[in-house]
Length: 124
Image (tube, rainbow, N blue to C red; front, side, top):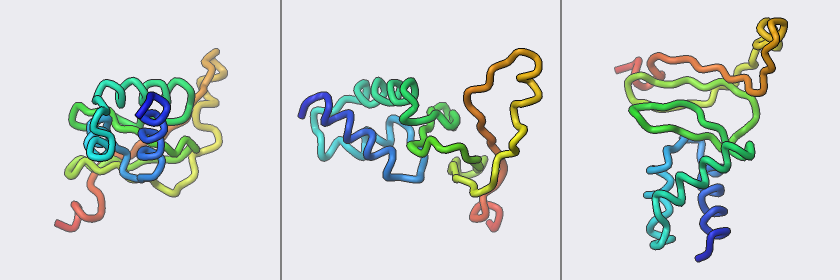
C-alpha cells in the first residue's frame, strides 16, 4: 500500500460516515485492512484535508479533535453526555458573520454549534 492508497482510504472513511470521527477512530477502523497504516499518517492526512478544504474540524470533544467530510455549511449539535456530534438540518442565518465584516474582518468559514443533551440522553 502506498501513500496515495492510504490517503484515499482515510478520505473515504471520513466521507462515508456521519459520525464525525477522531483520527484515532479512523485509524482503528482502517488498521485491519491496512496493517502498515500508522496513526501519524492519519493525523497528517487529516490536517492536509483541513488545509485543502476536503474536511473540516468540527470540535474537540474529550480532548480529541473530531472531523467532518461534509464541507457544506451546516450546523452541529454536540451532546455533552454521550459526546455524539450530530448534523442538524437547519439553515444558517444569512447574516451570520456580516456584522463583523463591517469592522474589517474577512469571514471564510461559518459554523454553528449547539450543545446540550441529544434526544437519547435527554430521555434517560
